[in-house]
Amino acid sequence: MGLKNKDLLGMKQLSPEEIMEILETAKMMKMVISSGNKKTTHLQGKSIVTLFYENSTRTRLSFELASKYMGSASANISTSGSSVNKGESLLDTARTIDMMGTDIIIMRHNQSGAPHFIAPYLNASVVNAGDGMNEHPTQALLDMLTMYERFDTFEGKKIAICGDIYHSRVVRSNAIGLTKLGAKVSVYGPRTMMPIGIEKMGVTVADSVIDCCRNADAVMGLRVQLERQKSSLFPSVSEYAKFYAITKEALSAAKPEAFLMHPGPCNHGVELPTEVYDCDQSVINEQVTNGVAVRMAVLYLLMARRNEL
Ligand code: CP
Image (cartoon, rainbow, N blue to C red):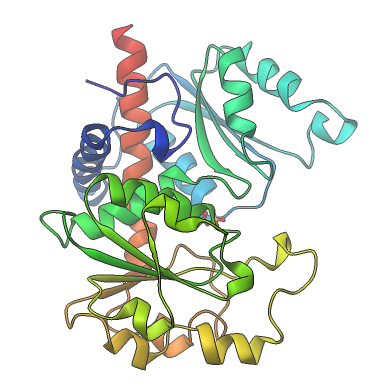
């Protein structure tokens, strides 16, 4: 019972069995959420802190709700209003939170590898809530839960992912998790936003949005991450929308029962036209709901390991 490692740093560290255990646990947590009484005692007497060095709506709030639903004492700290703004180092900040008896620290940071750096120094379990351009494991897990509710197996399923591949920690975590479970991942985006050697991750690079979506079981759009670009990597928003957005035509190249995903937040009219964002095949709002269930499952399974030890 519980996860093998003290920390959840990435999909890379999870075995296929652990991924499935998280998804099955999240399904149960979803039943708790929809039962009308969201309160459980799984984390009673435990303390959980979210430490966010980057902005977030979905990830931070869903972790906060998940920990509150499960009865823990939870607190939040971000760069503004904390001693980080007085120059306190990442490690000193993390150790300070740890020494207050915190059981789980959930961290988002703009530097790839930041949670991996602090985790060995801490007694608390560290959960990666997004580190630079590296990984966003709980996003991939909620995406996979959304798929798992529609597929009985990931084996042989084709997942199309289009957009800003280069800057996306979401695509990296999804590619690692989905290929571990036997799915085939196809990616497409501007050449300037495609990491060299991405094929080594076991994904195929498509020639167009339509080629990427063709016969896909699920289609995922990615946000253009302007905040991570020093200078624009494409000529104009209108050209991006013309050549790289997931249009109705592109979505119709996927299987008839295929569904549309996006991790959010979305630049409407850039990576997705609004009518596609809101179309019947869109499960974007459901992904948000699944985010709470997956984060409840992750906290529960990390705490189960700690309790067992
Ligand atoms: N998908 C995601 O990580 O969204 P937030 O940045 O709002 O947390």
